Length: 74
Image 1 (spheres, rainbow, N blue to C red):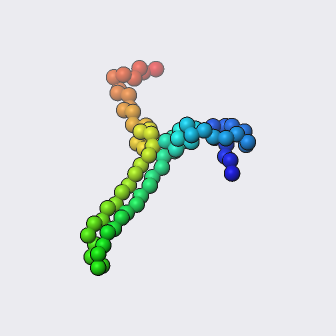
Image 2 (cartoon, rainbow, N blue to C red):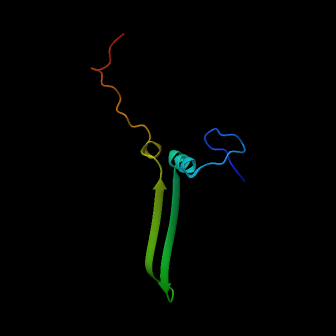
Image 3 (tube, rainbow, N blue to C red):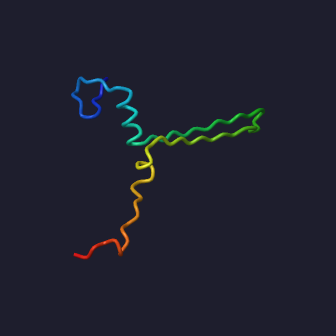
């Protein structure tokens, strides 16, 4: 199945660059855990969380609001 990326037509193929751009633009979260146990005793427990996104996507637009002295009264 082919999907259109970036406004391309229905028969267009998406390049790897287009797919990575869309992934970073929307963001992806992957979580997983690994447990190593012997005789029912947990020896090692590893939990991993991975976030792949642009800074704007992850944290939003955090520009400081303009200060009162900088705003010109109309």
